[in-house]
Image (tube, rainbow, N blue to C red; front, side, top):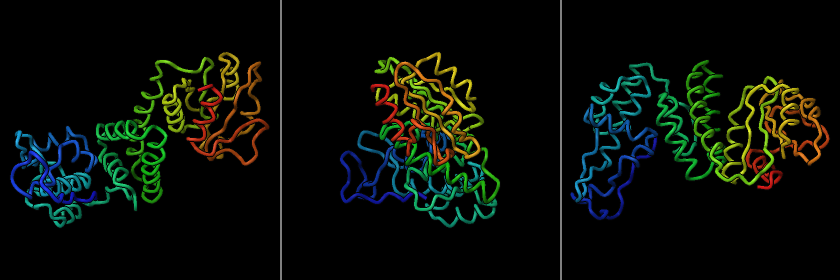
Length: 320
């Protein structure tokens, strides 16, 4: 559960009501803390009366520590399957106590919280939003993270830990496939938008991104495309399960500066696909990424250790 806000040592300017209001937070700040969309908080306020109780000198409403504590109870209950009306009733009666949330969760079966031990608050927030199937909140969290830290750090520091947690949950319970699907769709939506936004690309020859034959994992390719876009390099993403002959045809037709092929699973990491790519008059970087490739790759193929390495090598080959 996210840490509750601690009162600041002094009352912020423009907030009336004394020291009790010193930790007043905006709806956006509380939404980030809880891992929900601001629109969700406004709905809870409007429908169930669980909203901000403080006002600034300019009549702006703000959340105090008790408000946030009640919202934490509300959030925990809804994640545990309690209906929002009942969750709000319990939260409003709890004064932020954790006990009502715990007892209600037990009564409703519990078990809907994603285990992310020692994870950062933003990772836990994304995990909560995904488990709640709150697609709008997931999109907002991802967009904020990309804007603040960039595509590849968002992928490595935020998305990968949550996907790993969902994977562990599936392995132990056989549940949460729907959570993985929703999160994957949201990640693809956000990263696809970044990867397509290159108004003045530096490269004249394209960078081709493809998943190996029979490989279905494409999210890392979207992350690479987004990372390249951030440095002004346009790429063409060919998607999942690209057969060797199709990739070779794409190379012949487009004359790329670089080709990057992803393999997540050892069953899809056939080095013959890389060796079979046709030569070009101009140099072409052929790079492999992902844990599915064997230790020995064909001569001339570069293995990328991680996505940051892939973006740097591909951008250099493209002249970006």
